[in-house]
Picture 1 (spheres, helix red, strand yellow):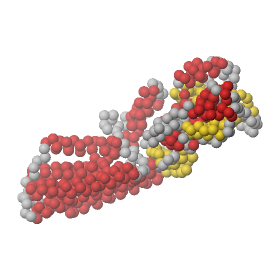
Picture 2: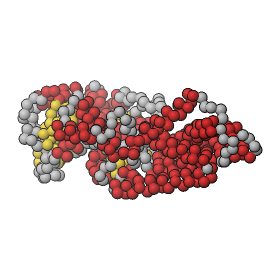
Picture 3: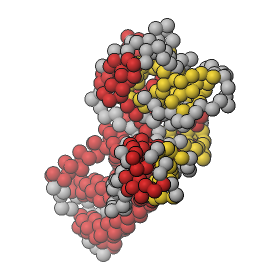
Picture 4: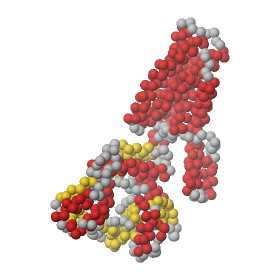
Length: 562
């Protein structure tokens, strides 16, 4: 056979060597996983400038020492069906954002109409549906001027589909100016809301320290959340199921009457840990959680769990100005329409830093800090489906997957040796390297391994052998025609190549389509299947050829049996 170029031989050997080294961490999965967790925690503490307690730092150092730092440590993350964990399907209440959007527009519309006070008279906000802002003016004769003034607040919709359209439409109904969001703005708002919800959920889950979550948008207003390794669906819901909208409001008075009328533009809210006590607050907050830049679990002056916070520049100025002007007044801290604390302002608080106290446990303070740091969800969520998959079921799935893979590989190895003798052993070497390189690739890109993924690996074994079967059958045909062994092997590889390439290109197209159209388990299968096709091409065409070439060129056999 014509010898393979030296650079090709070296390249093939390096790829095989890399595959063996990169796949090795998966053999010691538990140790490497603990090593990676320790490295991540130490890196986080170093970036934050945090000094860990001596006992914790020593424990992390021991965990880090379980695997050498100079070796690859990338693993194939285990999916929900293998590790166990929680599955949620949530619907985002995107319509909630319409109300917030129009509530934010009301002060601007009021200021615009105040400039026309001589024409329109007094201005007030009238009751209306949540997706509508209705403004009543005292002088109906000036309704056209009022509509024109409010219409100037419209801005273009910044999307490709909404090009040329404004965000609001302003009409008149009697003495009322009616403001509604346009369809283009609603679509853009829905997309922004979903994208923001996805990012905030991902931040909350990541900050809780869970591994390799799957967080995907499904349809117009649904989000799929799968988190391996978490205890239960209830635990996951407690982490992401609240909007965590934080705001700071002036307190007008307290009452024990749950049905008391708070008055216009005020609200009546209960106090956490104080049954029967209600606070009447101004509806417009002084500052909101959107202006928070940091929150951390801490302890108050009495050693009780609390949450410290810090505002950005604008929030710090508002917070400082209000506390300076309202010393002695109560100031309510509201989280998701519940007052978690209502301290009295003792002095001016400059710098925009403070502390939230209350009846917290250490776990509750930590969870609240995570929620606030990750940001507020823009809208509420309704959970349509929730499942908890126990680790025992995941362990059973892993054992079943291993058994299936081992049985499949043994069957293929035995078949190849029985059918092609020594050449069957050559193919088996390539098959083993194919699986090793595939595992190395999946580990390197961080592809999550699921049960369908294991099925893709098992299928790859069969497909890898298909290419070898084509090559060996072509060699048999050449030998039957009396071709010399070295020429028969050369011709077998060359003439089978086009058929192998055609078959694998169609398989790759199938894999790409499954990945593009599919979701969840289908995508998991598509990833391993597509990568398996690529690795089987490499091992069948190049590795097997190199092994056969070394055998033929060194032994110079007069005849071979294939």
